[in-house]
Image (cartoon, rainbow, N blue to C red):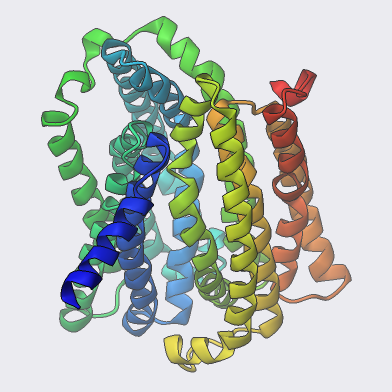
Length: 458
């Protein structure tokens, strides 16, 4: 019996890891990613009630708003990380290690200059910002918010530089390894916050230090490890900085930059919009609901994120058959996710109760629209990851600029004219993100069938 079971498992293992070499690498990355993403999701869910117990609903809402601001500042890389990932995937796929070193060196040094400049600017203007107005709180909290914002942004800028390693790992089709960094950070954050919750008084400052300090420590150690071992021959060096390589990266990177501005504006400005139209209390409601239903996107991204460099290499080598088959499989998976999302929605009131208790009340209508948002976002991601991988970004750029320009007016309209609650901001975000679920599938089919002309092919 034992031998029979072992033979069955061995047979299933061989079958799973058979097929196209690119698919085999993808499957291995997915298995590792599933394991560590599971740890990451679990710790992130545990962190919310832990933080709510350490702070309170209002203070935690403020921290979430600060986190949103940090996403804004991630734009300062002007898309160089994404541009490097595409070019690096091509260079590594063709075995051009010196060219890979030039891409990495040019990107790292350019980002270092950029974040140094903006860090100096931020530190200079920071004392003149009325932080209590930014967060829509009373003036007596201004001093505390000023210190927390300064620390959070300094740590973030440092993280932003070192997180370029994640793009290097993805370009080398080591998404599984890259996906271990976040869970390790989350576990460390969880441990540190648990300790301070038992030993220190309630403090936004301590929470900021725990979050940012733990994440920075992990990514710095990872950079030291990989560039002294696996990537020793291609680690960044000022001698390999190339102006022409920078121009090449900027050509693609600026497109990613504008796309990132629009995407982050719609995704992360939501917290700021809610705080201004309502209050930080509603920010907490939205974030908890988003955290629950983001499970669908996080799970799907485990599969699609490693596909980015795989699509780049497949498209360059003309392997269209593999791209089409992979897309069909993703569409089948999305159908299963739709069913799972409806089940999750029906259970959400019970899950909220178990998760955060009575401290936060989540309107069911908010959960409905958040669930719809993530379903459409996941659907669009099937096609977006291919489009990003092949660098055909012009129509995506234009569509997202249009979407981000109508996002704020729609949010204001739904709230003030129609009298909707916090869900009004999510409704506006769904409409503004029309590219993802309408335009992207059309562009994908045009490109993959060789029918893309003009703007569809740029």
